[in-house]
Image 1 (cartoon, rainbow, N blue to C red):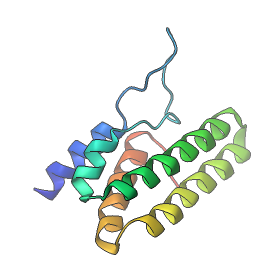
Image 2: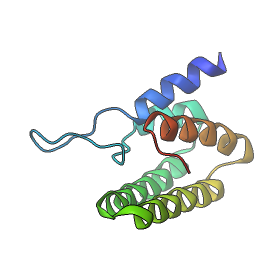
Image 3: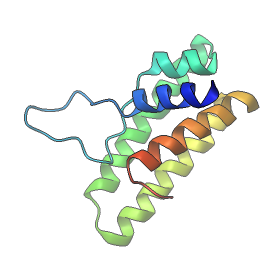
Length: 115
């Protein structure tokens, strides 16, 4: 049951973003459905608002990483991921964070981003 939930939430995290016409999303474009995540994690409305701010920041940082070259790209990607994890650890309870981390890791692996 947990595996099904993780797969469902993971797939909603990588759903196609609202992109410009003819623009292909890249592996650095991490979009998700906050309602699905909130429901899966049983988040409060305050947690959802905080998560949305964290994700907006994460998305900006991943766009910067995408534009960087070589080692800088890896460094910026790792920094964005670690920052997201740190912020989400502060927002969520221990049980919620454990579930979030599983979904997040699955999403990153599905996108081909190792960290």
